[in-house]
Length: 124
Image 1 (cartoon, helix red, strand yellow):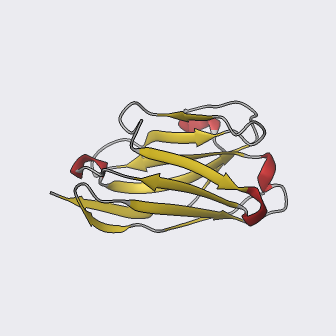
Image 2 (tube, one colour):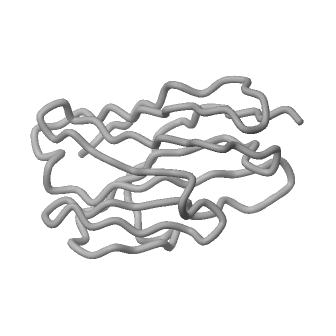
């Protein structure tokens, strides 16, 4: 069982940066592939980025590639999402997710554990 708590959201102007954090409970955090998803008002939740637990490999949605970076520190049970060059269309609630699958996956149903989300608002 894993519990996830996100933080770091807020209001930022277009072109600015934010770093989201997700702290996981449980002693086996290092064995979970972690991901970030987001959900804008009136839209479905969508994949943003994922990082494999064993290889450290990453995979990004095309919409954020080159602007966002996912990373993790297993010793701190924490995964991060560094968001640069933010755009108004990045406005959403951002969710942290975890799965025991040892592959990079981007589907909602691939993830077993979810955080409560943190709001990111980008003003134009």
